[in-house]
Image 1 (cartoon, rainbow, N blue to C red):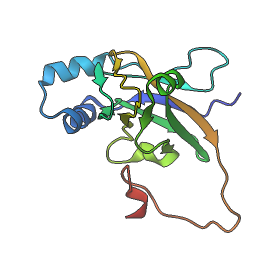
Image 2: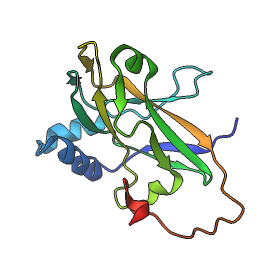
Image 3: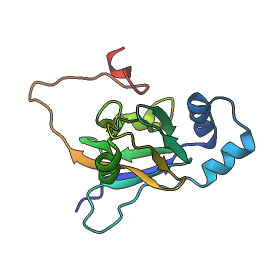
Length: 170
């Protein structure tokens, strides 16, 4: 098994910026405490393909509700690899918890963006059974799977990324 990536926390100042973007003005001390408790993603078992991402905060999503979560996490990975993000299977199965963009794609060059490659999750409880979902702080709620990818023989792209969603088409 090749070792191709390393998870890290973004800086505390970057986390605070992302946290305020998601939840509005917050007490600095409280945000720093949340930051200090952030856990790096890890696999639950030796045979797991996915790395569990842990929620930095507790939240409840009513049916039809959406929330954006700053994970405080970034990932440095080898070129020609990508991280795919999905809700944990049990949450999708029980509550229809979904990523708003269906699958999160974290490219290897996102790490060097101005936002330090800060990974966010935007989730919707798409329950058609009227089930609310509650996630406690520190609970695994998403999973990431690393995949190798190829490019076409005539690919000559030299553009450089700086940013997240939509930044590669600006």
